[in-house]
Image (tube, rainbow, N blue to C red; front, side, top):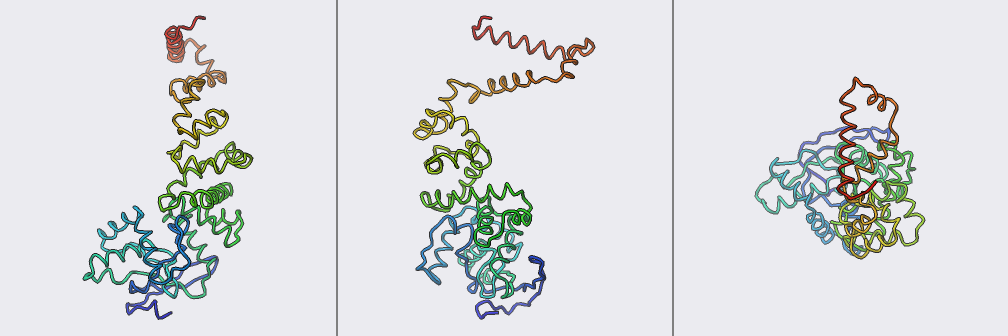
Length: 346
């Protein structure tokens, strides 16, 4: 063990299985000053630029400040304070650099800063990996813990890790799917969504808050028509990034309704200049089913009636089933009344 990651606390040796290998990890309470935040932490590495000129304490202070801006980290602070400690140990390398638990490390730093006389916050519970564990092994470990496991990252962090496993460690999508217990199509969707957000959205709209926009990009790659639009339409990616970044799309769920907007050139222009609601209103002038629940249900019912099965028709025909006949009669009367109110002559 390196000098920077030593502790006088009793040492407990645990064993984990990693990629078919049995690995021994040591559980100790490390002095907090010997634990170093990792600039590759997925919560910040993909949303903020860290100057390569920064080293040592300057880099650590910047990383800490960036993580502390995150509301989730502040929530974790309150949880740890109420619990009076960690539920789960952080994981570090031999030199004290954090592999898993950067947010918990920041929380302990803040607690020590606010309660310097309380010795509980001077040492942080940790598990130390052996020196022969490489970056690929660490990536597999974190994927098992935070993507496939119960202690999941945010969708953006999860997608970023899948992307890194594929791009940095050359794991094919089939292998990632098996290891992380998800479909290959889901893996492909996460990789494409993260790639577009990381390389096109974040450079234009940087900051920790940008990670909360990941659902927009995930929705974009779920529907075949939208995937086709992105792949085959010049400038589509830039346009989508602009819609999200400027708030023209202000809810991820709105992306699901983009196909109908993309079919209308005027609606696309209105979306770009005024936003999603205005584009929907424009389409509703020709198709009220887009914004009206009543008309949407009427369209659905019309389609269902056209595809009516014989057994449902027989239920009405049989005189003994009065309830089925009453439902049809009520529908007929309501539709006739609605037609009269609309002034439609038949």
